[in-house]
Image 1: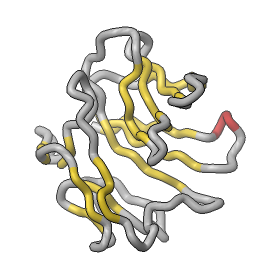
Image 2 (image 1 turned 45 degrees about the vertical axis):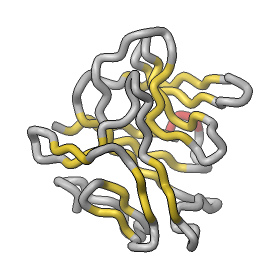
Image 3 (image 1 turned 90 degrees about the vertical axis):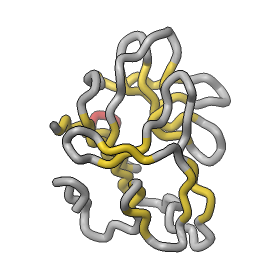
Length: 149
């Protein structure tokens, strides 16, 4: 349980300032913060492009298999500019998940080819969003966003 968020059974890893599991996964990130609603988080992205980085995962706990679900809980401040702000960046430096700063639409950006897939989901300002990414589902059900307060 992470501040009222229940992860699916079979969860193999949890990355949050207060919980990094399993123990052999190591994370380097910005200074942990606590929101007014007691949610612990890392302040990442923004103009500083601060990142939470996986520094150790020798047993491949975070390697995605043929079927997977990745849950991300995040909130985005007011964005400015005409570029993207990354939510999740892959090991190969491709933008997996980003927010278009101009429209606040959730998208997938291939950093190498610059191809962008804009999704039918608008990210609210300064509200917690829970996003599940799953492989192998039709495009209309690939993501589910839920706003939590």
